[in-house]
Length: 591
Image 1 (tube, rainbow, N blue to C red):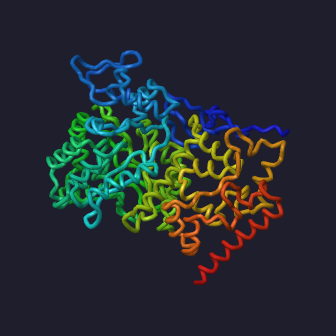
Image 2 (cartoon, helix red, strand yellow):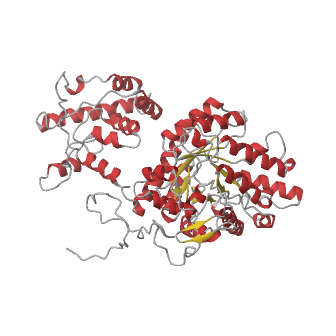
Image 3 (cartoon, rainbow, N blue to C red):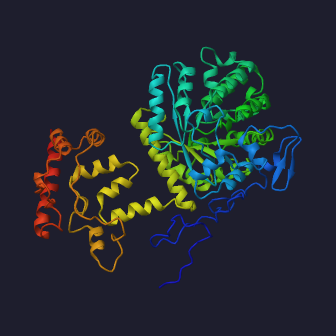
């Protein structure tokens, strides 16, 4: 056997039982409790991590005492960060550790105390249905889904339905970005019905019924306090967009694409004053601390096209966000920082690691980024490519992008497609980083696939209905092959039959007997109807599942299986089935 020097650096193996022949992750050692927990190796020239953490920005009157801190006499801790600084493991930290089994409650506390993780959990929302979770580099990568009523679309009940739909497809947090309808009623209903943290961009509701230039500082504070009392878990605050940054935008191809950023830019230009979110930041901190609302420091000058990425406007704002992170920590507030939306692939690692330096390891929450601008209608794909790289190189949470990005308001299926694309990105990054147990799910599905155990295969699939429907579109019986290769060319079947190979022989995955494929569920039928490949009568047959075509009688196996009849007879029936399906599809296309 050849001697190979694999770039193993000490990362955890993402497979709990070290399944298969994969040597493990090529990422850095896990280093939980240090600045480089679950990190990618640096390409030469990348910024080094900051040597500071939230511990270096204690409030006035606090002192470091051993591993923790001592607060002034009479102090009452209100935020998860303050509890962590005092060495307290809260109920919420314990719940996070239950959901992140590779971390202990004490490790969760320490990550929060260092500012490398947040637990977005408004004390009001904790009184409803919130199930605490954490966002940070030591935890699994999270995804966010956006939703919200527009001035011409949706109602409160529809938005609550969208909330549940987003969570169904994997959203770890949801942002309510409503700009129309009864915003108060909608927001309150969403918070009360949500088990996941809810975020908002408060400035949106502040300008309903008024022009941005008419917005006063007192109205800003009033609006923030109101939403904090409603139970919102994190606020996007665009406090990093400063007057002095605006000249850097003048030559951009697409200016300011952040709604919050553009609104505040106009406010500053009209009033000839500094950003009120910046000048009143201490007061904003006081409101957010009282309810433990986490900061999501908004990137109001994020690039809206590849041509504007990594420019002076974006990076100057990032410097300001680093300063604001320090201020928020001094006020006892939890902080994550938002990041860019359109970045060439080669610049993603730099952007992630620059934020790690400037913001001292505070969790990075990024939109995408999109790695190309020329695929509208497919931007859930162009962005999840960038999101995978972002999560591997430093992002802690990914804001999804749907197929409707840049072209319209997302519908129900767009939300599903966006969530799935981003679950792929987050999961791929976790496996690459060596998050313990992150590959166990993949290994289980691989065993089911190797065993040609279709039921188990689809049961383990993230989207069971789509996987089953696509299979049955070609061949609606669970044979020992699929329609891609057919019987004779099925490499998986051949590998399974080779005695010396372990492939397909894992305990608990082998099929005890050949199973009839069940009838299509309504969801699966809808999937195939949308695809439009099969004629209506074929869909009806799949839904009612007439088995006579494959020789099924009550209590018997289908005769298309090579372990039921001789191979030549099985192959004849298989070929007939595939030919019929192809013929029916071609006829439908001609019609």
